Length: 548
Image 1 (cartoon, rainbow, N blue to C red):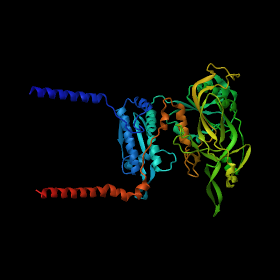
Image 2 (image 1 turned 180 degrees about the vertical axis):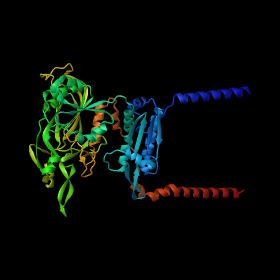
Image 3 (image 1 turned 90 degrees about the vertical axis):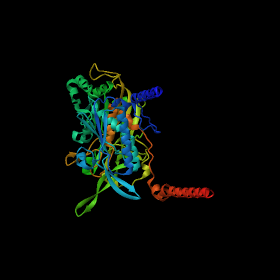
Image 4 (image 1 turned 120 degrees about the vertical axis):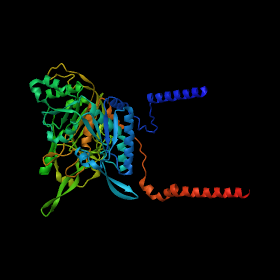
C-alpha cells in the first residue's frame, strides 16, 4: 500500500513539474518551408513595446470565396503568432455585413471579386480590412494590395506576403509617442497645397507636417538653417524658380547634418494643362540652379523629355455628335507609365506609376550607393528641348524603330555619406552647423515634378491614385508614401515589404476538367474497394467455417 502511495506521489510531482515547465518554456515551432509564421526581429521589437491591451478587429468573417478563406486563415494564424509573442494583443474576427455603412465611413471600401465555381463566374463583395485600437488611437489596415495583378491567385499571394509589414507598420504608428517632422518647402514656386493634398493628407496621418519657406534666408540665413535642422525630412515638390546660393547652402547643410530629402523636380517647363488649353505648347529647359548641388551627390537631371510606348492615356476630342464633343482615351507617350524596382521595399508590389513630361536621370561615379526605383520600358525616345509639342501628334502613326533609346532612369535612391557641395568653395554665410560631409544619410530624387500632383474635381482634390478622366489607377500615392516611410524609417520596418512566400494554389481549370475523375477516385473508388474487401472477407469466412 505504501509503495502505491509513493508511486502516485512521484507521478503527481512529475506532472506538476511538467506543467510548470510548460508554462515557463512555451515555444511554437514554424514547420513551413518558407518560415512564413516566424516573426522578424523588427516585428518582435515593435510588439514588445505594447504595454496595454491592443485590440485587432479583422473583417474577414462570413461567406466569401474559398480563395479568400485562405487569406482569412493566414491572417488568423499570423495574428496568433503576434498574440503568442505578446498576450496584450487581442484578436477578434467580425462579419462586416451588419456594419457596412460604418466601415465605409471609416474609409474601408469593399472589394468586388470575380468568383469561379463549377466553371461559372459570379461576383462577390468582401471587406478585406482590419482595425487596430490602442488607447485612444486607431489605425485601419488594407489586407489586399492595390497593385495590378494578373490573377486573384497572385493578388492573394501578395496579400499574404504583405501581412507582416501591414500589421507591424500599423502597430508601430499607434504606439509611437514622438512623430517625426516633415518640412514642405515653399518659396521657390513649388506646387500649391491643393495639388498635393491627396499625398500629404496621408502623410499627415503618421508624421507632423510644417510648411517651411526658404525666403527667410534673406533676413537671417543662419537662423533659417538652424530652424530647418530641427526637422527630419524636407519635401521639395516641383519648384519653378531659381534657388539662390544661400538657399542651396541651407539645403546642402540640412543634408550634411542628417536631414532626409525627397526631391520631385522638373528640369523642363512643360505642363499638360497649358497643352489642353491651346493644343500646342513650347517645352523648354528650366534652370533651377541645382545642377552643381545634385552633381555633388552623384546625379544629373537632363533637359530632354522621354516618350515611352508604355504610357498612360488621356482623353482626346475625336469629333461631335449632336453638337456634343466625343472623347476617346488614347495613349499619350509623354506620360510614361513606369514600373518600380521589384527588389526594393519602396516599389515592391506597387502599381505602375504615371509620370508627366518626365526627364532622364544620369548617375555619376562617387561613394554613394544608387538604387534605381522607377525605370522606363525599353521602347523609349529622347526628345530634346526646346520643342513645340502639339496635341495632334497623338494621332501620328507609331514607328517602333524610332523608340530605341532603351531603359531610362526616372527615380533613384541615394544612400551614404554625402559630401557638401561647398566643401572647397566660398560659403554664402557662416554657420556653426557647417559640415564638410554627412554621416550615413539618404535621399530620393524623382525627375518629374508632377508625380505627386493630384487632379481637381469640382475644385476639390481628387485621389492621386486615379485619373478622373480615364479612371485608370496608378501607384503614385503608394510609391510616394513608401518613399517617405523608407527615408524616415530607423527600425528597418519597411524592409518587411520584401518578404516573399510561395503560396500553392489550385488550378481551377484543370480541377474543373478532371473533376469527374477525382470525384470517382475520392468517393466511388473507396466504396468499391470496401465492397470488394467485404465480399472477399465474407467468402473466405464462409469457406473456412463450412469445412468444420
